[in-house]
Image 1 (cartoon, one colour):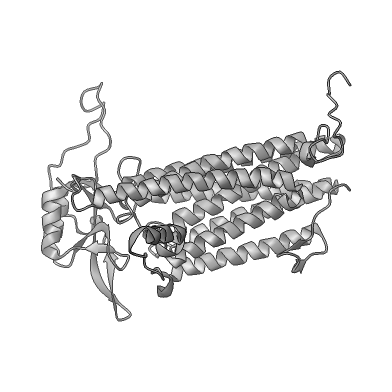
Image 2 (cartoon, each protein chain N blue to C red):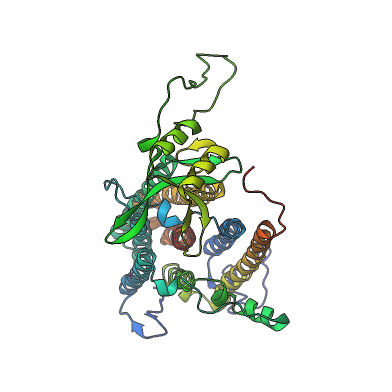
Length: 333
Length: 148
């Protein structure tokens, strides 16, 4: 052994420790290194989000108006509730994870198994919730018109709720006047077999304009944020003029190219950051499942230490930690 | 067992009998903080929606003052509260769930100082640049057209 492991003469001190420098095992230390580097990756993404947001600080979408849906509660505007639920689920699964680690310290196989199982369930609920969140976001709700300059014009009317005048959004489906003879989507089977076309928008700008002209109450809202921290609502004449002169494309929902909620960068960052985090959760669940089976098979019982559970636990808590920041910067601030 | 845990949080103001108890205590605290965030996020009290200090004006020292006080001068108090509460949550997740509290001081510093330094640097640069691009886009003589 002496020929392979150099004796530093500092054993017993923090920097000595033989094969356990800093009093942490090799595996745990490497997990910490990975976590630091992954934390930097995520902060790079979030800082880039901040960069783009500062660039368009006067027209960034307001998160409370974007994420208002809760499953099974159709048509109600409940901002924050669902994400708060997701946050709680993830923190809860972090707790079951740390309980599994604790049970591992006491070599209690039955308890480790139970808590690992609960952690996996929590992770799956979270990933499922995120998938639902994405689906709702992609689906969109009110629709909007995009201008030549890439800006978004939304629709709504003033209504009085509890004696207060409020701007209520109206879906384009409610007022668009459909015309006959609108072009069909070009597919391989009905046109040139070597050319495809992406799906067409639900309406043409002209149909929206006619609908707007026919309904006196509907006004256009731009993405510019005014002094009160709300989006600017245009006058009736200005509304018609904007759609007539600048309207280019009708958009519903969001993808990497268009975004009915406002700046398309918002959707890009939403997909990228929550997607990257969701992928972390997914891989965490997969690793947890592997460890779960190892626990059941008694691998760690035979090894005499449940340290593997601890290492996976570190990763799992890190995923939770990242979500806390994503939650703040996407939904709260 | 060789695994010893420090069983108190809030600098010893809240003590626990076992590690399991401490975990539930930390969960209660994190849930409480998240609940505050959600309630503030839903109701958005008017008082917290506008900055309390306006940027200082007049010369070099005012600019320095604005940089030092930037979280208060340029940020809505509500957002500042959110960010502080987030850091509090991050602290307890790292310290108690990831058992950073039980690691040796040098490991703690190795992870935290490195991360915090690099992240602060990154945020400073990118936000500074973003603000500058905003100024370029929105100056009176800006060459950018919104619609064409």
